[in-house]
Image 1 (cartoon, rainbow, N blue to C red):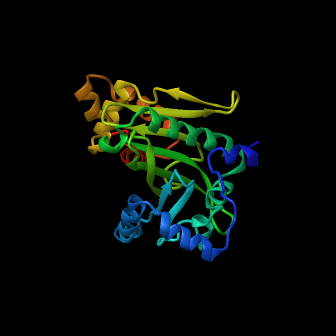
Image 2 (image 1 turned 90 degrees about the horizontal axis):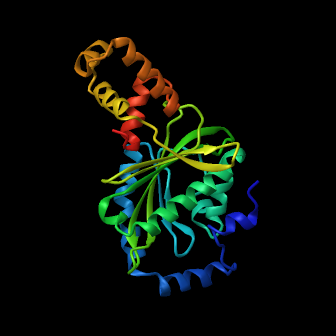
Image 3 (image 1 turned 45 degrees about the horizontal axis):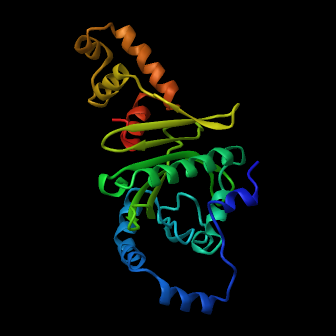
Length: 265
């Protein structure tokens, strides 16, 4: 069970003050990097609406969302202030499926740890793909994919701002929880071990499976792929079924879309 104390380790909540006081203080102390990115949100909002995505700007130094937009209403008619207020981080976390909150907390810690250990993440375009079950305003749950990228760091290269895009991928994958981190040099994958209550790093795709997935993405059929790789079409179909099982995707078309969205291909 995730307790209030546990979530506070990630999402520290400052002492409550009047709205007027908070507004004055924010104008006086808001760093230039925050102002710069908030100005960019208008453009990114239009992109998010076109792509049916939720967009979030997460300030790690203040432990809060500076900005949230859901023009496509993927999450329903939530009040945006629920996310951008002082308790917004806790509010967002409370909407994760209860049985997946432990995993989600570990995933957030893993992303923070990776960002601290890889100061060059901003320059290299490293993306963290988080997957979990998330509650909409009407109480129903969707399979949610949240892609996060560091866009601002401090002098030491540690993350200050994360730009996050969220997608409903219920039509692509079965309910699951996990993390995929993609950088130009590596792809790291973790799944949640429900028995040990920890994240297990896995080699999700073998070299052969990556080749097959890439060829499937080109629209090639099993027999054609078999001829290219010098193996039988029956073996290709077996690999295809294994890929669906490993990714929790519902079919081959969903597999290709999911792989492109998360950088597996």
